[in-house]
Image 1 (cartoon, rainbow, N blue to C red):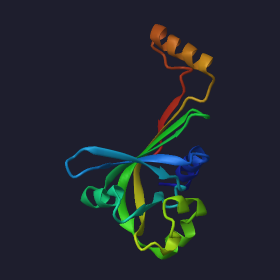
Image 2 (cartoon, rainbow, N blue to C red):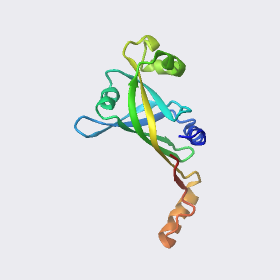
Image 3 (cartoon, rainbow, N blue to C red):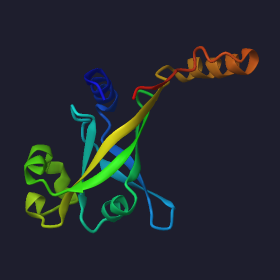
Length: 160
């Protein structure tokens, strides 16, 4: 992922506090859970704190394919990232990424022996940007229904 894509993703993700991480369970079912948002790093990876015993940890070891979804309803921005997840116990990276607000989930902080990082290497990222008022959006939907044109409905783009 190039620097322009990383900057663009971070700009869209900025202000979003919770993402939904979806992984594949042992039986093939999809399992989603909320995760505290971290930035997309320069090399195109996203990091999340997790517990070694959490479903996100063991599901990523069994089937590393995941999806991360971000929604910012205030700006009408929707982002979907898919990639491969892996676990890390890199203390230096944990110290770099730690935010005191994470203490709500990890009261022992960085001293928690169960604390792990879940690293998502991005394969694909898409976004939908429908940042406009509801009236304009409805007019765009009506225009599409009548003319088949999607002008005025917003933007959808694959950036990776």
